[in-house]
Amino acid sequence: MRSDAHRYLVAYDVPCDRRRTRLAKVLSAYGDRIQYSVFVVDAARSKLVRLRDEVRGVIEQDEDSVLLCDLGLLAAVDGGIFSIIGRGRPLTGLDALIV
Image: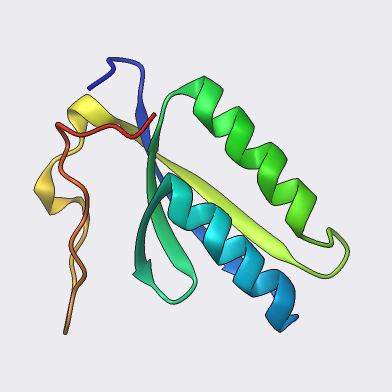
């Protein structure tokens, strides 16, 4: 695990099916899908820059919305940061960092 990596919550609202599918594929390469339009991404700054560039290449900025919320340093994230009611989805462990 990199000491500078942060955990991000990424949510989107994209009305076009084609762009929404493309965006989900991009985000799947970077993190874990926890809801239909919500992902958790663990990333160092350089990876986040690449992610933002890819997202900009997929969406229409006047029609679509993507929210990136910095949840803090990955090393400081504990298991209690998310509270799930109902069926949850597994997250990649803190000891794994996809590069």
